[in-house]
Image 1 (cartoon, rainbow, N blue to C red):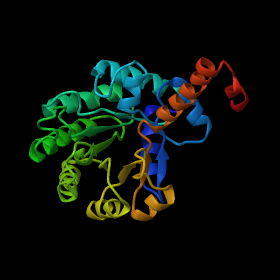
Image 2 (spheres, one colour):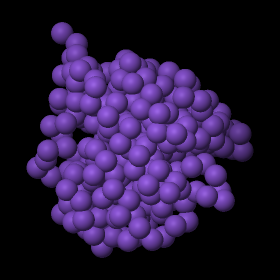
Image 3 (cartoon, rainbow, N blue to C red):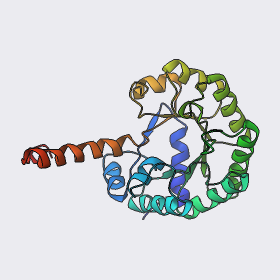
Length: 262
């Protein structure tokens, strides 16, 4: 029998309980989702960057409807729990975040992240007060669902040029207080920063592997206190690197040596 959404949600929660850390893999379409499931990953997550790229767009250019339709394809591809990158909830007001959580659940998702990035280069992140209100609204929406939807709150400081660890920690603490189930600060510069974040909060911490020089081993991250490790667009980029290498060989050399490496 296929797993129900509630069963997937329970399984996803249990993964965050430890011991140690687990890797949540980021597919970009149904085919990659099935491949990752076959390899033994226990949960999947969408990546806004990869989701946009498969449609020939840049990160942040998908509408909410497009992002959720893409997520639903990944949900339907396997029996694994799927969490989604829900960007900033696709709107500034807290109500948008709440509505997005309800729509995510309707798409079959059992988790999702809401970030504090505004999309405005002049003011790249929301004021901490509004940002916490947005997480509180999302958390309240999640609690109305008939299964435990896992809400991840993201502090985008380090991806948006605000290299302030103290402010990042204050934000994560505010989001934890607002009801987030998992906390996430992509782009942390080193393991000392990762340890500081994990020590400062009580909820499970997600670490994003995918930035050269700032991606550490599963063992190192688990020792630092991380519970979940996501891969962002890195698997998509690895796949595209293989495609480009093979295509360049055909175009520039007229040979098909890449076939021997398949």
